[in-house]
Length: 114
Image (tube, rainbow, N blue to C red):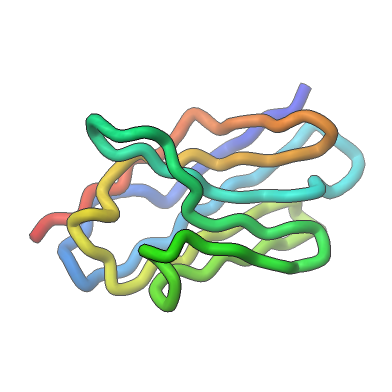
């Protein structure tokens, strides 16, 4: 059974920073891909950033240059460093991990005040 434990959300003022973490357990090998999605109130869930096992990354255009995704394969953990946060970054951030199947975390709330 794959389990994902997210941490790092919270309330921050515009221009501030947060770091999200997501630790995966339940498998003896690293995930193929790890990523973060977010869902703002009244909107669909969208990809924020993703990193594959080789370290290749892709980002939503809205976060390029501000957010950085990294992973620690030894710890099966993915991180999202979020800088220069804007009110429009507010939402629930979900960790997504792909082995053969995709798994979702329960989400962590990020609130950016103006």
